[in-house]
Length: 146
Image 1 (spheres, rainbow, N blue to C red):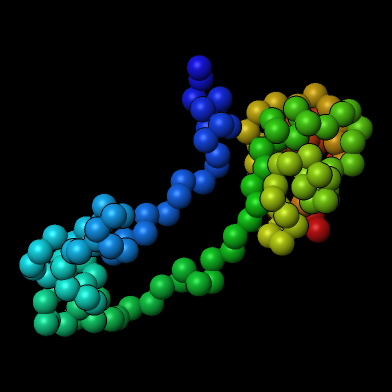
Image 2 (spheres, helix red, strand yellow):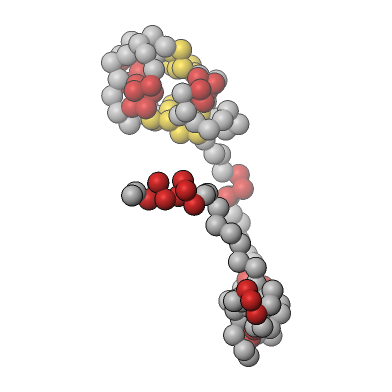
C-alpha cells in the first residue's frame, strides 16, 4: 500500500483536537498546557519579553526603505515558452496564463533569456532581458514591449 492510497481512504482533513472538553477527551483539565508557569496562563504568546517594551518598539526607526516602491513582475523563461508554444505562435500574457506559465495577468510580464529557441515567436510583454530579446530576434521572431 502506498501513501497516496492511504490518504484516499482516510480523507483529506485531519479532525481538529478539541481541547479542554472534559476528562473523556484526553485533553481535559489543564487542556495540554501543563500545570503552572507562564505557558499555562491565558494571554501568553511566545516569544515572551516579560513586562518590558517589545524589541520592535525599543529599536530606533530611522532611514528610508525603497521596498514599497519595488516593481514586481511575473517572470517567464524563454525555455518554458519554447517548450509550450508552437512555431509562429502569438505569445501574450493571456496565452501565458492559458498555458500555465504565469498565475494571472495582474502583474506585468518579464521574459528572461534562460534556454534556447529556434521557433519564431511574436512575444508581447512588459519587459525583456537583453539575452531574451537577442535570442528571439535571432530565431526570426519579434518582440513587442507593451
